[in-house]
Each structure stands twice: as C-alpha cells, then as structure tokens.
Image (tube, rainbow, N blue to C red; front, top):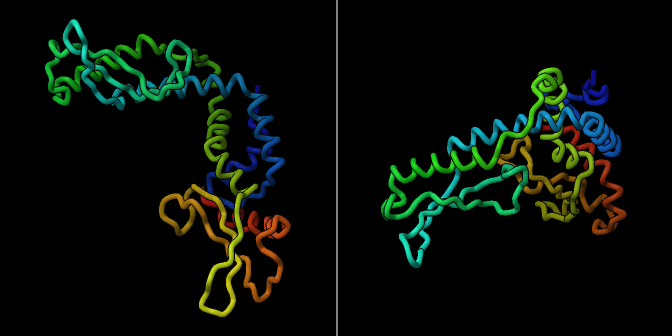
Length: 242
C-alpha cells in the first residue's frame, strides 16, 4: 500500500497550522515531483472524481450569456455562450466559451432575459453537457483506500505556488525615502497570496533590509540581490500564512 512520503507527512502540520516553513527549495521540488510520480495513478483517479463533482455542481448554475443570431431563411436562433473548462468527449477545448443552440425566437420569443427563457436555457445546457461531457472514469475502491494520501497531496498542491514563492522569491531592491536623511533599502517581494496584516492578496510585499547609512553597496546589482536573498527567504519563512 502506498503511503504519504515521510517528508510531507512531517510537514502537513506546518501547512495546516501556519507554522514556520522548515523546508528548502531544491528538496521541496524533488520530493513533490517524486510524490506525484510515485502516486500518479492514485492522484489521477482522485482528480477525476474531484472534477466530476465540480462539473456537476457547476451545471446546477452555469455561467452563460444569451444571444440572438440572425438567420437568412428561417427564424432567428437563440444561442448560449457557456463558460466551460471541463472535458467534452474526453478533450479539453482551448475556447473558454462553448456555444449551444437553445431554440428559435419563434419558440422562446425575443425577450431572452426573461425568467422562463433563462430557466429553459439552464436545462438545455445541463442536458447538452450531460450528453457530451460524460463522467471521467473513477475507481472508487482505489479512491476510498487512498483518500488520506490524495487529500494530503491535494492540499500541498493547492499551496505549491505560495510555498515556492516563499522558498525561491522574486524581488527587486529599491531605495525609499524616509523622514531621516537616509533612504531605506527595501526588498519588494513579488507576491499575490494572503499575507498577515494585509487585506486581499497584495501584488508586492516590502521587506526592510537596512539604511543606506549602513549599506554602501550598489543595491541595483544581481550580486547584492544574492547577498540579501537568504534574508528575504528567512523573513518569508517566519511570516508563513496559509
């Protein structure tokens, strides 16, 4: 029986409890890829199950817009442009919206925003995708046997981008004005995730490195970034926020 790798079993609590990240970038990448490759069949099975549920939930209230399309020799058509990201006939289409014929203006009238037309459209959309987008295959015995493992992987996967942003951050260094005669040296860290004390997901978070009174290096060079990068990583580890 496949087990959750020791590396991640020991670290799940760090994610669940927003603890300090005692990880390093290279090891995380290696262990994550190994986890996925060794458990690929089990993870793919879980992903199919998860995608089937997500699709069914979405079809209860799909996102779509209705349009009247002119026809030359017959009544105009009412077409729904449906936002869709799930497989159709086992293929993911590149188009974000999928057109579906709802009916004609003779059948539905011209008021395509009416409640009756919207309800009829939802039912037509649901019927269409239930026929064209069949459930992905799921081995439910495997799913139940490895539920703990797959849920652990799914949690880590959902946090992967944020973990990598902490362990291998992108940032630029600037000199910012202060009330004193000396400017502050600040690392501006590329972000996009929740952060303590900040609302939403800030694009950048500042980290104070020091004052130009004490730092005489050229802060715009790659050499200086390499010098301060360990400090930036340490700062992000201390401020874990999942």
